[in-house]
Image 1 (cartoon, rainbow, N blue to C red):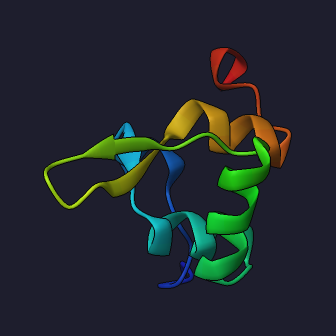
Image 2: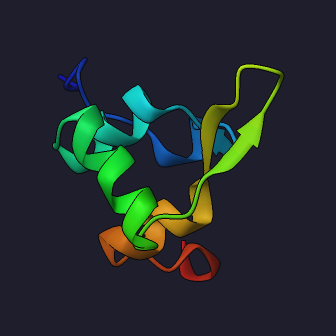
Length: 70
């Protein structure tokens, strides 16, 4: 029986929201914002509101996952 809460990394979009990244890394969205300000996790700003998106490959690198080998 498969775990319904398991995240399939291949199914994730190339740009992730703060909530998606926070869930993957098991930290709060505020921590993700702080890491962005500190340069640990650079964000891409989209639209006129300046919503943050994060590149999947950067998040995977933080997790220690090399996408080329998956």
